Length: 459
Image 1: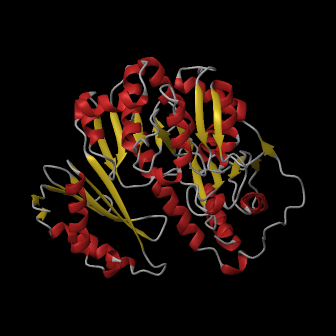
Image 2 (image 1 turned 60 degrees about the vertical axis):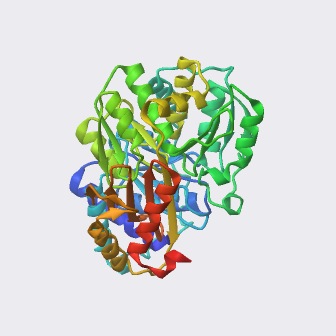
Image 3 (image 1 turned 60 degrees about the horizontal axis):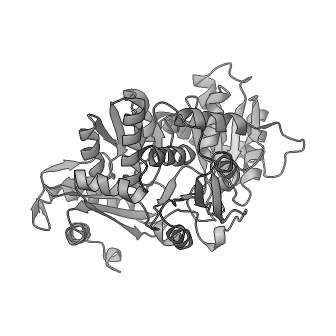
């Protein structure tokens, strides 16, 4: 993202505000930023652009998680929130997340309208602003105390100061505000990658299993009562290690949180998930007398459905979960606190909680394959090939029973399912498959690769 791109988007935001929130100029727009190179400078540029067009703004006092910015947007009764972050993507990425007044990701139709306004801005208007032009000290906001109180209230728990934790912050924004909250509520004994490093150690701040070997080793060494957490670069996704140092799958975390919400709050209702999520969620939800609604990948789609259907919980395969009684926004801090609460209430190690899920609902095998594409790949060609997967009558010998084309193409069989889609944030083709065995899931994926018939998928 260049400064010109950012200015164009911000102009689009102003036009959207004038159309949908006339007279809102006195409402301060909160602007946040992560720990990447020039992220704060981009936030200051946003203040420059918005204030030049008559909109009042406030900037976060320090690098902050995206869920904190979502909370601030609602708390300040702002019509819009702006977060400069590239989340879990590599260090050289940058981007903007827009937040709505309800404290969640901006709705897809609003994003589309802002894009339309942004694309209509004349080129010569975009060069009046530049990074580093801010001359006066900006007005800052600090809602860390309020945010911590909101987390405790939403969790319905004050924490356990004696509970030891191991936490990997991956040099992201969670090493600030989240670290302080965890220290207030629990007793983190081992804290990894707490420093600010815009290069993220030469990697990307994504809490996936292969990047968390040290956390796994520490937790397994500590023993029976241990638990490990890891946060992504902007703090909206959570990874969990059980006391054996085993990496929990995102659907395992989500199912435990779903059970926790139903049990502790005494509610049932709609459960929103992305189309790429495990079928285990459907079985657990059905047992709890809840109904699953799946939506296209992207938390803005989850947020929209949570609002429309008054959902009790919403999550996606990438590791973020939001709660209807709090905000329709994924929040890794709240996820961590609520999972610890479930662990305490049931007085069982996390591994036993997961085993009980599978003993009751079966243990499907879930896999994902990512194929890197050229930056200038032919998107239309891939979309056509993915649509043509609907012609498959079987997967590895299993009859295709139904199709779902909400996002890419998903084919269901009696034993499982397979999904192919193009990533919305990176030049990647993603394949997701689930079946009763790993061999069958891999066979489903191989079938998709053969049907797509792109040579680069076989490299």
